[in-house]
Image (cartoon, rainbow, N blue to C red; front, side, top):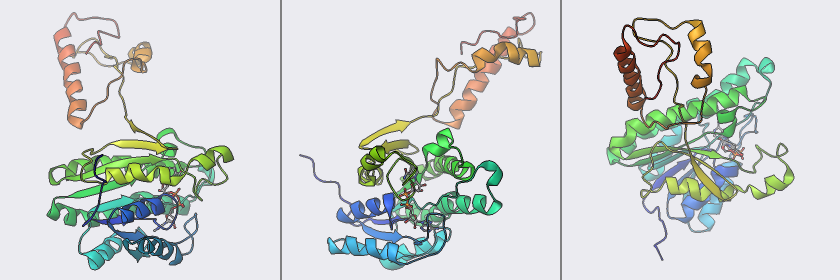
Length: 320
Ligand code: NAI
């Protein structure tokens, strides 16, 4: 068979690695030869308090099974300090898994500014801070693998998670641009959308489902995306229960809302075209912002060729 995937010589920073998914990422990376920085603040699920125990326990586990690891107790919000731990201990950073997270679930009316800010800081801003600090090192060595952790709560919304959903979709946007900026230096950034049994999901999932959603079933998917042989960049991968799939955002075919370039868009044009605007029976996936603007040029060309005496109906041909 094929040789086992190894990470010898690689240094991996896993944030929030003291428990749940992060712990599984750290253990797997450590067992495959990576030097692992086990970051964890060790606070409560709501982000209160701190303890060195969470990170220490995982570092011990990795070392006991023959791997190499150091603990980092900084909050991920101090991204520069987290990355500095990797540089001080091992002199480089090749892999960054932005995984640390907290919840402060409240309905939108009850969400305090502090609940909003802390959730954004720990998920979105911290992932930016850690990524920004790791980037120059990855650029200089022409290699990097970065993971952002999103959530179906962001993609679909979830009652009581306005702060969390917004931050988790923010991470998708962040990943999109990190993927573009890193491309020429072999720095890849991909997104994991996990569903796993952890203290974060305990009690909010049916027990039968909870028992089948072991975080160690997701770790190989995430760790594979951190290997040099994985060429994906800018992919969103959903995984749970021993299953994984790529996820896309798609665009419908749309509708032209005015007869020609000489005319404007009226409210009634929009009303008349609404069924076509919202028709998702034929969708396409666009890969770049250039492709997205490309279709706008096609719309303009179409409108231009209609010119005077074009269709007077609100909706003209839309077969571009
Ligand atoms: P978890 O609560 O078991 O693990 C999160 C870890 O992050 C904890 O050990 C915690 O101490 C650490 N942490 C929290 N704030 C920190 C900070 N400021 N600095 C450093 N470490 C900090 O949760 P789980 O389920 O393993 O979640 C991991 C990631 O996956 C999170 O980003 C979460 O939002 C995301 N996720 C989890 C899902 C699930 O079904 N479990 C679903 C979708 C996303």
